[in-house]
Image (cartoon, rainbow, N blue to C red; front, side, top):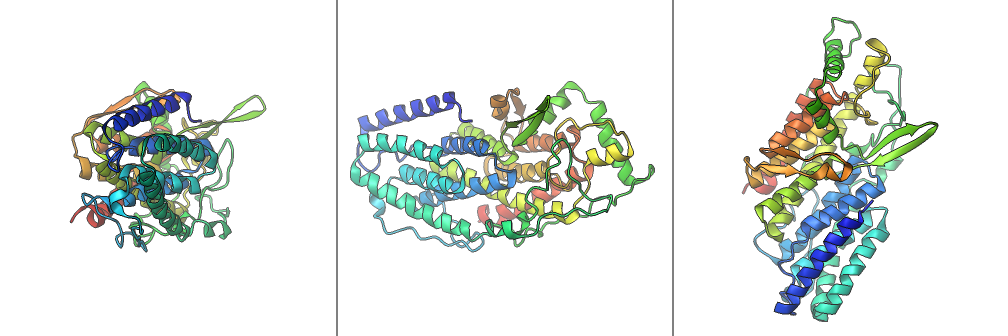
Amino acid sequence: MISNNFKFIFFLFLAVVVVGACQSNKKSDVYSDWNHIDDSNEFLSNVIIEDIFTPPVASRIIVYSNLAAYESLAALNDTISSFHGKLNDFQIKNGDEEFSNVNPSIASFIAFHTVAKELVFSKDLVSKHLDSLKENFSANFDQEVIEVSYAFGESIANQIVDYSKSDGYHERTGLTRYSYDNDPGKWKATPPDYMEGIEPNWHTLRPLILDSASQFRPEPPTKFDSTENSQFYKEALHVYETQNNLNDEQVEIAKFWDCNPNISYRKGHMMFYNQKISPGGHWISISNIATQKKGLDIYESSRVLTLVSISLYDAFLSCWETKYETSLIRPITYINRYIDPNWNSLLQTPAFPEYTSGHSVISTAAATVLTNLLGDDIYFEDTTETAFGLPVRTFESFLDASNEAAISRLYGGIHYMPAITNGVKQGDKVANLVISRLIKK
C-alpha cells in the first residue's frame, strides 16, 4: 500500500518546486528542469505492489511507462535519441503540437502516468495522483502551455499503449496452461500454496531487443537423477547443506533479495499474504538511487531508467522461456522426496520451474547496463527493502549487488548452483545486446 509518508514527501517536494518556479517564470520554460522520473517510478512501484502483479508482468508495466516518458523527452531535446526503429516493430510520431510551447517535464509526466494507468488495476490511484498535480499546474502556469503539454504527452502515451497492445500480452491468456506429467524430474507445484505455474506462455510476447525469447537459451541443466552418487543429487545436497549451515549475514542476504511480490503465511486455519517489491522493481529502485547520487537531469535519468527497464523486460522473457522449456524440479520437491522429508526452504519457493534463476538473469542484465551507463565503481546504499522492515545493504558496484542477488537464491534454498551461474551468463548476454544496439554508437 502507498504510504502516507511517501505521499507527504512527494507533495511537499512538488510544492517547493511549484513555488520556486512561479517566482522565476510562468512561461513555457517553467518546469523544464523538474526531474520527476525517480518519483514517478517510485509511485508506480507502489501501485504495482498494491495490485500484486507477478514479476514478469511488473516488468512490462515498468518498461512501457518509462518508454512513454523517454520518447516525450527525446522529441523535445536532442541530448537523447528516440528508440524509433531500434526496438522491435517500434515506430513513433512526435505529434502535431508546437514544440516551442510544450513543457518537457509536464509532457513526460503525463505520458508516463497515462500509460501506467492503462496497464495497472488501481487506475483510481493513478487518476488521483494526476488530478492532484493538474490542480497545481492550472493554478500556477499558463493555460496554453498546460494544454499543449498535456496534448503532447497524451499523444505519445497513446502510441505507446497501441504498441503495447500488439505485443501478445492479451493473447497469451488463451494459450495452453502448464500441464503436469509423471516425469519425476519435472517441476511440480510447491508448498505451501501449490499454485499453478505463473506465466507459462510469457515467452510468446514480443521482445523489445531480442530476436526471440530463445535467443540466449543457456546450456541444459544437469540431467535429473535421484541416485546418491549422481551429479544432480550432489547439487541438491549442496542446497540442503548450505541452508542448514547459514550464518546470520547469509540469512540477511537471502531475505534482502527475496523480492517475492506475494508471500503467503498461515495463522491457525487462516492464510494471509504479504506484498513486497518485485525483483525488477528492486532494480528500478537501485537505478533511482544511482541517478540521484550522480545528480542526473531529467533527460539522462529517463535514459537510464528506460534502458534498465528494457533490459529487465527482455531478461524476463529470456529467463521464462528457459524455465518452461526445461521445466526442472525445485530443490524443495527433490529434497523432500530423496533427502529429508521434513526440510523446508528458507524462502518461499516461487510458483514456476527452477532453471534458470530469475533474479540471477535480471539482476545481471540490469547491473551490466547500469555499469555501462554510470561506471563500475559507484558505491551506494541500497535502501529499497527498508519499507519492508529489512536493513540497508551497501555495495561497491552494481555488479557487486547483482552477484549477491544471484547467490542469495542458493542461501534461500530455492535454486541449484547451475541455475545461478548459467543465469548470470544469460543475463549478461541480454544486457550486452541492449548495450550494442541502444547505447554504443
